[in-house]
Amino acid sequence: MAEQNNTENTVETQNQTEAASGIIINASQLQSIDISERFTHSKTANGWRVELEASARVTINFMTSMRKFEVTLMQGDSIERDGEDLIVFRNKPADAYRSQRGVSKSPLARSGNERSGLIPDPPEESTV
Image 1 (cartoon, helix red, strand yellow):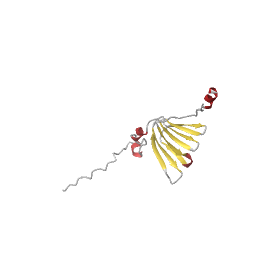
Image 2 (cartoon, rainbow, N blue to C red):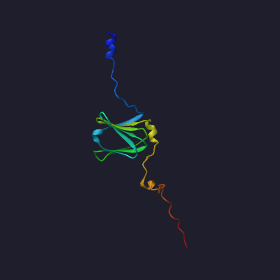
Image 3 (cartoon, one colour):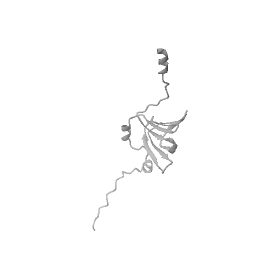
């Protein structure tokens, strides 16, 4: 009898992915994903998985109302589509990402003409 109860209490283990923080999005509303840096893509049983090879700015575009979600992810973070869910897995707690600046550069910064963003002082007036 004890052996029978023991087998009844056994629970099948499922594939689990652990993350320090993350985001879950309804994938049926997804239109496109823009990833600014290198990544790898692999198929899974219920969808696909993208793993970032470098820190990147990720933009998730939705079909409705031209809405989008932008997030900075770090190397080793991943995005997974599992059925109707799009899951963003972060390897660090959410607070660690708040201090990250966007990793994509402006066109001026890429060309080497980076600006400070400050308004220049007006020229001094002089009388002759």
